[in-house]
Length: 238
Image (cartoon, rainbow, N blue to C red; front, side, top):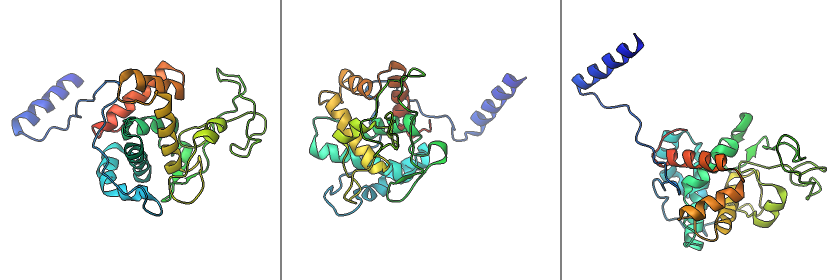
């Protein structure tokens, strides 16, 4: 009965020549599709340069469900890398894929992304104490970044561990500090980390997969990020 109903509705739609509501075909390749290219911006403008991405980000945000400020951050980070390290070729869709998997774009467990990119309440992972299949990473920052003086925890919308943040963390929203709980800062820091981890080229399957595996050493994670990123590339929610 259910199948008959579906077939009937498809036939009716076809006869009436109504617009199709079918989702577009989602790519499945590695690297993921790049999506609508982010525009050129003056990356040296004062203040939050990610705001210059707004006109580009608005329709993509509406289609994908990615919060507008988060999407601006991904476009900003990809554009900064494009201008400063064009050989890397990292796409905003990859950054969106990682943040989607890691923290639902900064909204995990009801967190909110403010207009300046700050994510609150702060998103923290479980203690990395060697249990439940996690690595054991004793405290490296005296709890100054992650609030834990015994073991390290992953932090923020891109889930950096303190040691990695101390190496790659940068300021991207113009407030003069590198903050793992700010999505602008975290997105650019992730882009830098991924470009280095790939060996400098995210445009090849080998380089992209290598970089994402360094980010999280799990093939299922790599495929999850790929699927998110490819969906976003064609303006589909994931």
